[in-house]
View (cartoon, rainbow, N blue to C red):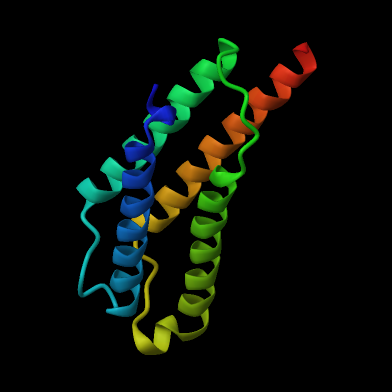
Length: 128
């Protein structure tokens, strides 16, 4: 029951900030500092484990929170992706800014996790 372990949630929040800062550093340094694929993979594994655990319990009817924390993760990553894509589009060719390759993968994965969660919540509400 990962979702109930407050330490895991704190670690995930801290690690989110760490990976986000690393992505920003890679972008602002014009890819001088590259995000480790291992760091991104570990991040998505931790998020997937948290979401998966929570949704399995939700399906088993042992969890029914309507907490909005997951939406903040989605907004953080999508806002970052859109902002950096705009900056890279307008100034990238002249100044060397490129979107870090792991950013679209992380943003897309977090969005998919959230969509799955929303579908399970919706399906559960229809059953009740």
